[in-house]
Length: 480
Image (cartoon, rainbow, N blue to C red; front, side, top):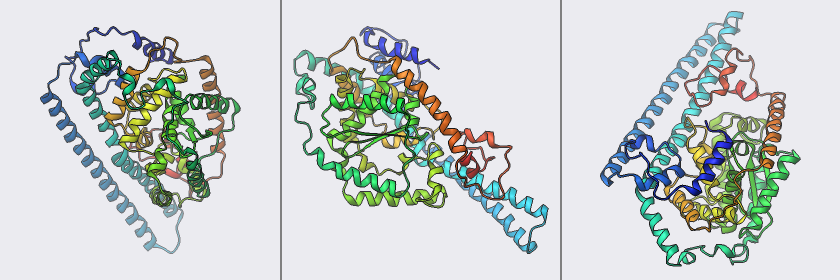
């Protein structure tokens, strides 16, 4: 794995790659190429020589693989159903034997309880894996196939447009006027919508605890203010940093920006974090959430939350169970939020990527930071880890194209910020904050059921992507 320094150097060198540089990439099979980062593929794509028929055949193969994976996961869920039935049959037999448990029967009951809870946890993970994680893995591969096929010609068209002096005629092409251009009017009308959504989230205890560390808050707030000042946002940005392992960030209409500690921890450079912040503020500036959302959608969101809360089995929302739900990492707020409230659809995501690249550039950050972070998430091993991130930031080819195109159009800067010592100082503070939060949650009130599950399998709780792990109790893992 490359170090942060190496990633920063690689990102900087990307600006000076010779346009006629050749790569021995055509000999690499497509199933290996789709594992490479988007930026790397965009540089190498002109030297590939795949035919349209070869690419179509690979797309069909991916479709077959996806279908096979779906069938495999469904079968595993069905097998778990069968195992759960057998365990509950054991409980039924125990209950028929005597009116009260002997010590031996009590020990057997405890073992069966823990096995049931563990299998239920695995079953829930399988469902999230099949419904959310696995599809985006294949969508990322398809987006990279599209990039290989279409980017060379599109890049040539951009070069010609710039040479012909028509770059500013594209949509949002007046980048030198950011901050004074008209932008989307009536942004202030969205504040009430964002406030209502936030009120509902808090009312039903669906917001993780806020971070109160001044070093972390000040750094991210300063970055958000810097990006907002160099954007088309016309409303105050109200930042909240949430204690959540979930790797995600989102913005509600009206300038309410939320960034999870999991996302900050995952970013490797200033430009990556700034790219995410700029993307979210682009949704605010373009009023995407307000355009898609009516008050009824917030009610629908709450109904969706209730459904997921039942699926997770924490006893519903509005209880202490919700707190533990967020500690599960991949089952966080990103799976709750109604995508219309966040302004997420194919058209708006592509526009937010274009505007986000512009705002990052105008703020002095390398505009490719969002792509490098997107690449990081796309290369995550296992289907689960990036499930919530890609649910709220879907891997459409159009959005990769939008960002790459905008980077080509934007005036090149020799001093764009990629990394800084201040960023790493903040990350050091975050590391300490996460240690303290881990201890705090360990000492928090417990949902541990009696009799408690055995502790010998507790080390398995961190293997979130190894879904065959059925040895640790879900509630025990949540409370550790």
